[in-house]
Length: 278
Image 1 (cartoon, rainbow, N blue to C red):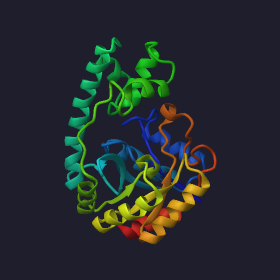
Image 2 (cartoon, rainbow, N blue to C red):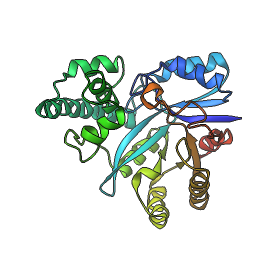
Image 3 (tube, helix red, strand yellow):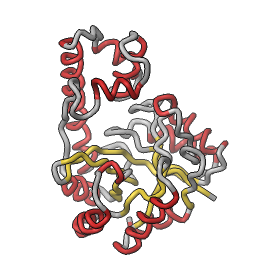
């Protein structure tokens, strides 16, 4: 059977509730999932209960944006529950930094003549943490752009006029804090790092020495060849080749739970391997 270890709910920048995400995983025939909302663990109790009700395995976690070699890297942190702990305590600081960044994005958009308000964006986010996909949705609703891709390309992506960097842990800090919390840190969608193949291997070897537990090899938007290549790198480093769809619901409607763009299959043994690494 298959699993999906990269899923988002409306507690960050997904469109669905944690319960609905679990139900979609069950409908897809999955045996296990991980909920990995950005910077928050708020949806973990609900998803955990829903998974137990449906008899599938569950891992609580989060997705962090960290700094590595002067660029942004996303890191999934598995086996986290709400409460106190080294990494949990830092999440609140990161959320405050995200909020300050969002206010500055509003300011920059207004300076560009795009008269949206923070209240509109917060309403779009609902119970979740406000993120750039919510800004994109408001820009579409107000008629300033016709697609989320256009919103990012013109205004919100790195280097564009409304982009604002935010507070980040370094990759090494995130790994250390995760391990101190009894969690397993994994690099998400490494293709976004724009590294050559040789740079992947040497750079990641340094992070493995710090405690990195895995790399997301089986990703929703990867070709089979890329998945196999990253899995080979993981094997060579002695870490877990993890995977998931990166499901966000309507905010990334081309990615489906369990199957990504249609051909994704993450083997369920990955959950066992993560337990062993832990």
